[in-house]
Image (cartoon, rainbow, N blue to C red; front, side):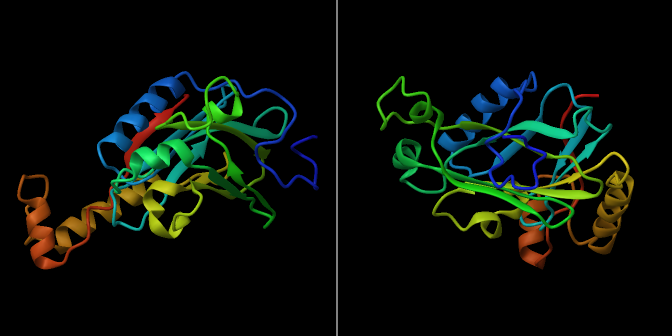
Length: 230
């Protein structure tokens, strides 16, 4: 099946191989460690096949989704990459989730078309090399979708969770095409304005969290650089 087909509905079924970003294995290990440390289930989306990009994230409770700027149109008109997810460490049942989780990936294209698949098994189940109840604290899912001008929404989450609504900062990406880039500088100006508007918070110090809690101030919406291939 061709990814560019108008009948494409599953972002995990496509023609053509995903050549994973060189940091993928490190991300798999990092997210597994985060699950064990109690962090909420999140996704890192790394573009592959040497496609030029930069990605950013934001702090929890900012309400800001993650962002990717693609630097060039893919030659074959297809965006390929890897979504790496981990089970929620917020629960005492994290070990159980690591043995039983399945995942959903959803891609909404600028033209409104949606590619979605739920029930995606963990890698240890998919390859059949280990018993089905083997715990996996980080799962890598290769996906692909047609490249279009504008903003594509890429989201992923554990099945049975609250989905994007449960953690927009960690489960949703806005992927911007090369001709409609996200304005990183504007976001940094928004960050500066937020800090200036709340001088009662001692930003950037050990007191910041307690000050924000005391005064009911949301976190700094600054963008943090994640991964790139530029």
